[in-house]
Image (cartoon, rainbow, N blue to C red):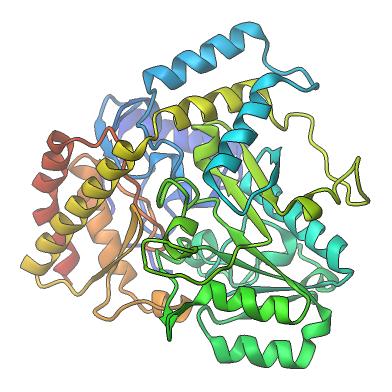
Length: 451
């Protein structure tokens, strides 16, 4: 994709660090979107964070709307999370043995998410997904996995085709290094295309182990699942998969405990806030982000009979030295302790207020846009029509986003550096913080409108 024309002047130490990093780290970053590849310029190097604010190595302060891509739901360096981690660290960093808080965190997740009867901790969302796929294949004795264009499930070899997020940002169709043998067991369909899913199952239903889908896609921007005749897209997938002996895996790495108290399942599950009464549940679910409170963590869980296929009970092998480690589980439990119903009401109100501020500024500058939400998550698409799939998302004006992004950054607001990402608020985003964002939005909107 073209580099946005608005490229701000570099800031001393960040520019220095980025130059050093490029000599020793590929592209200077340890995760692709951090390189600002689609928006241009030098990423600010962050020295510290507190609440809703970041401070870079040059002393500049930013309102943060990335939130470490989701887990900082209580804000950065929240006192109760920091204290919990400090106390855990004082008792030992890792044991390579069972410890009490991994049990408590598993119980907390299961208490919040009805379909999860048993859960296993891992160290990342990617690891959670690859492990869930292995369980699905082990349970069904089948090989084929169905995924959807624009849905990202981590850098799992079999799932990188048309994966959205970082790949969308850089215009990459997939990844080198993925073997043909691995890729041939993955079928990619357009998100939301029920006819395509039905045709595939009619032709190859006996080969399909599982369908995996983001509970609400957030890696091509936020694209909430559609409903037809009262049946949401995800429960539709559930019914069709089960009809053919396949499983449904929902990826809630981003939406879990972030979209609502019970993730996106709290919206489109039975009795969810969208009014769905369909009695359905995913067979397996994957989690990350919030359950680690900012430390590396992931988890996958679901029906007890499926989870009991894992070693040492069953034949599906999965292991991890640092899985369920004391620091990550302490941070996760402390984060959950701060996430009561009042916190989610505040997050929802803050998210809506910010959406209104953004839309007001873009409308005033006559910038075509749509804002789409999944619970407290939302995305701004620089196009006039709603986004329903990956093809729609790719048709937005990414140059306009680049101009908008850099004006916001120069004004002290740190947005996701890609037009294909969700925006994240926290309980630390007070009215005063929203006022700071509101001050920058008009000039950013005018920059987006410029040609």
